[in-house]
Structures are given as C-alpha cells and as structure tokens.
Image (cartoon, rainbow, N blue to C red; front, top):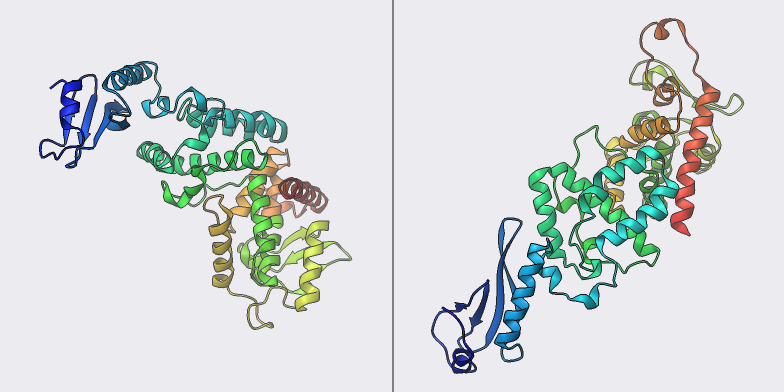
Length: 393
C-alpha cells in the first residue's frame, strides 16, 4: 500500500495499534510505534542478503525527501556502492577509506621496506581482497558490526584466509595510525581469535615487523628474566626449545666462538654446532651473570624451566601482541623463510636449524659452515633490530 502525506499526518503522534510496518515503493517503508512515532526505512538486498536502513523520522524527514533519498540509494546499488556507505554523504569522503589506507601503507612501507616476495604476498592477499571493502566510506566511520559481517562472509569462503586477512589488515591500519594518517578505527576492536581458524601447524611464518612487535612485548613483559632471555634467543637462533632451555654455561665456547648442543639434547641424536654471534652473545652473558651454570632456570634456580612454563609465557605474549596465533616453534620456520628470501644457501639454513643434511652429504661432509651461519645470523638479527628501532621511534 502506498504511503501518502495525508496518511502520515493521520498517524503521527497518536495511539496506534495497526501493523508495525507499512511499505511504499522501491524499498521505502515506515515503522510506527504504539505511540505514533514514525520512522522511514529503506529495504534492500546486498551480497545476497536482505538489509534495512533507517533514513530518519517524520516529520523531520518529509515523505518527498524520503523518496528522493531512496531513489539515490537505489542508484548507489546500481553503481556497486553499499547504500549504508552512500548514506554517509559526500561530506565524509575526504577522510581516508580502506583503499586509501592500504595504498598509503603499500607505497610508504611495503614497497620501500619489504623484499619483492613479501610485497607480492601482501598484494595477493590483503590488498587484493580488502582494497574494495566499503568503497567510499571513511574507515574511521565503519562500525565493528559491519566488519564482523564482512569477515563472516570471508570465513564462509576460507576460514584460514579470513583470519590471515584480518591479521594483515590490522597490521596495515595500525601502521597508518602510528603515522597519524588515520585515527584508530573500530576495526582494531576485532581480534584475530574472533575470526576464522588459526593456521594449521606448519603454516605460520612471521614478518620482520611482527618479530619486532613480539620482541618488544617480551622485553616489556613481567615474565621472569629467564623466560625473556630464552624466548629472545629462540627468536634469534631458530633453535628447538629444548636445545636452549636445557643449555648450560659450558656448552658455549667463546674462545672458539661456538655453541655446541650435545647429542643427548638433540632431536636428531647428533651433535649440533652453531656460532656465537654479537646479539646472541649479549643475551647469553646476561643469563650467565644472572643464573650461573643453568642458564634458563625455573622457580628452582638450579633446575631448567619446564616446557609448560615456557609455553605459558609465550601464550601470554601471544595474547597481548596482536599479530595472530604463533608459537616459539614458528620462530624456526620464520628464520628459514626469511633467510631463504635473503639468498642464504639452503645447506647453511639446514645447519642453523640443526637438521641433518640428506644423501651423501650426511655421510662424508661433516663441515658445519660456522662462518656462513654467523653471517646469516647477524643479517637476520640486524633486520629484526631495524624494525624494532622503527617501531620504537
């Protein structure tokens, strides 16, 4: 049934017991409360779903203006613009949109700082899938409710990718906020754990920027000195947790500049040799001065900390750092991936990880490439510390 001015005047401000909604045409309708309060609304379909958008109350908004506004919103749908965005009006268009922020982040950080492969990764994921999100709507004005709807749709397509997109988008927007390009939007209220599922074991690889955030979170935490030093060294060395957690002072030979993991502490049951390099040596000296022979003790200073104690600590760090799900073991995969991008030879990386070389190399070649390992470790540490300095200002 069509709505008329006469109908509206007869209903406004009077006790009402009829249908709560009356439709007009082109999706326009009114809602009427029992006390005669009349509100215009626009019904439309977007992304295959039915939506309802409030336009304003009568008589502040007249029937004629409501019909004009409805016509404009229908045109926005034809142009591929969400009516909820179009309703914000041209006054808001000067504020950065999602696309504006991603472009700013890409041009001033991704292109100038990251390697080609990492740039390609971001272009194929967050930039490709999120650049057109809420086209034309200021990012600061997008409520968390709309973000939840958007990422719910992403979850239906690929739950793991949905969480990855949220983590990457949060990282990009956080960078823009630190540069004062935008105020912190409601998107930041949405946590990675709220969306999708975490990557399966073997999928998490951290960026240098994420490693820097984790390093700073460890440094600023209230955890024990033993836990902080252990996890920072795990990050730098890419070693297995037990190799460092159970380490004692005598395994580090400064005269030779080598850390030797005894065969009984090695997963492969073979001796592992790694170099002692600058950044790691500073942390090791702190552990030696603080604790003596047992470098990473638990509550009983003469006994190494337990794996559960170490895992609880990194779990607390994960919950506050905001880069998604990760474990200490992911530092190993990250080191291997990032150094492969830097051109470090695969056999050197395998030695850094404490892996056995395959084939005939495992029988005849007992060389550990200590000098090459050291150069790679120093390069990796410098990359992390560069990002730490950038974040810290």
